[in-house]
Length: 320
Ligand code: GLV
Image (cartoon, rainbow, N blue to C red; front, side):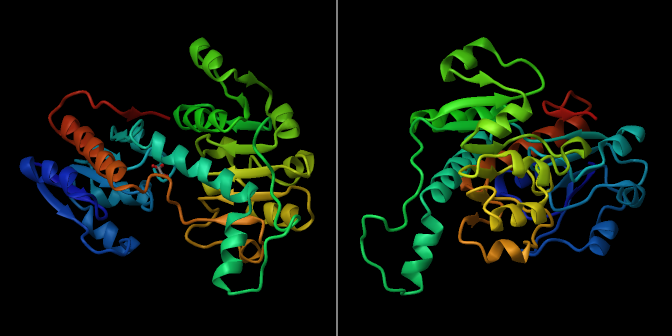
């Protein structure tokens, strides 16, 4: 029996599979584990099953010890893990791709609709019991039909978002490092553009790239200045891809029309400037937050950890 440390609450199915084969120590409280508790808890672990709120770095790997074989993130994004540091020690890293694609695309599409049709703003009027009345020019938004959705990072989630947007009548443009499969290009009638072209021509720009040093503040002053004044930014990827202060400034200055954000630069903190803006829709990192998706994520993380502990090939290995 190996020692498996699960750093936060995860759905029962995945946890039960780990417990059936190994000695599991799991953080059972609703609140995220503190760093000090985490460093104590991982000591002697053969496998760690981590949440995206836990930083897996040299300090933590030292605290775990040299017997550690794997870190299985219960997330598709793994920017909380120092993958090169793990690789140096021979610790394998896995993530949970695939199962959260549709849930996250649903949230991206929801944000597109919310921000272009001013739904957060409208709901606030009703809840605040402010006077209102139907009016020909009251709270007009932007229609999506015939507008361009620019997808930055046309991977699984980007493609799933594009499918939804196409059903709403949007035209799809994208940027991505490697060529997109012909069948997807044809299905979506998707147009490849350089990042610059995409920024300048899109009516809605939706971020779906991973976060890394290369994508840190990919969207900053310069990019906002080049977007259409009528355009909207959507972020369901990772907060620090956007320079949040530059976004606040751009929204205040009317350089862009609005933003829909599921992720923030310093989660769970939110730039106070965003809170004052009616044209920012703000939701608390709910991309994969459905009962079904979270259960599937825990199950995949368990599959990965169990495979590595059994000396088998893990299905979702990631490398630097
Ligand atoms: C969620 O943000 C994830 O990366 O799974």
